[in-house]
Length: 250
Image (cartoon, helix red, strand yellow):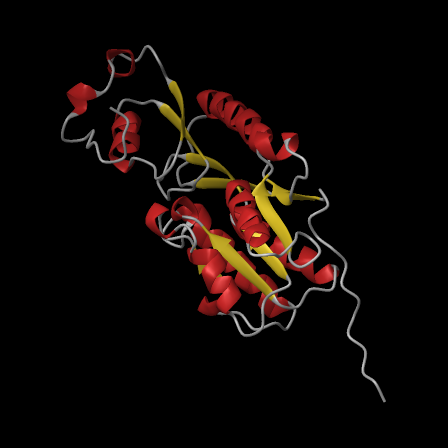
């Protein structure tokens, strides 16, 4: 009933009765692409809505989300601080440029490179296009004339997939290629060796969403849309090596 493709304005009877009858007055919506029709229907029912993880520009709604743009920028700056200047990005279907988080991470990645005076363009993005082409990123990486020494993967799972692909092709992390993932998911914290990552503040986002629901229940919904972005932090887990600056022989 809460799938993104279900139109709650055309079929409001599908929305659970506890919402229709006003038993539940505060809702935190989480997941992928937000269901706009459901949000509008809930607002009509005078339900307070906080959207978690994305920022749909709907008046009366508060959004609490990670700062995905800053995550991409932070990854580039971190790799550069360790001496890397050839830096690429790896995406996955659910973090592609067509998704909310993937597009923002890509924009932040490019902005970080421009700030550092590094060229940024579509050639920097190695895309995983689906199960039938799971080797696409590593094939694209190996085909590059100047292979990057640092890679930012848009999530930790992609970092593991890409790192394993490097190993199968005789390349080691971080000896040959440094990798930074994103999220700091549970598996990344449990495996060894783990991958350095930009930790997204998921617990903090949940707490802030709860606080915002209680706040707007007392103060009332905002007239316009309010967006709260919480920054990520870099976690060093040993998958980024230091590269000595190049020297010019005389």
